Length: 70
Image (cartoon, rainbow, N blue to C red; front, side):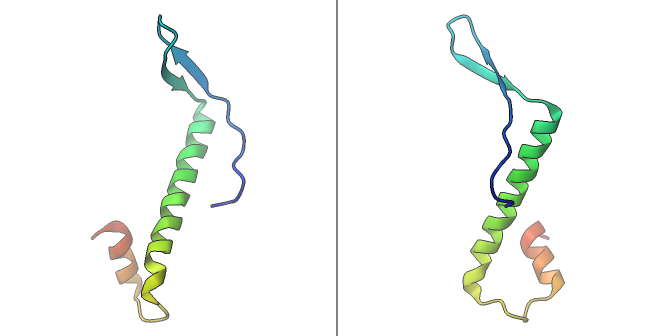
């Protein structure tokens, strides 16, 4: 997580009854939001692993297995 998120400008799509039905984003905004979501997921994964007192006992292969589920 990089801190404060930058401002994005979505365009909301409404139906005949004025209910929100969708949103349009620029490709740049979409890519930015996906990157933020991936960073958040990584942050939560590390937060989940911290209680196990990992120190220097985990190999890179163990980390890959935990992250990628292989």
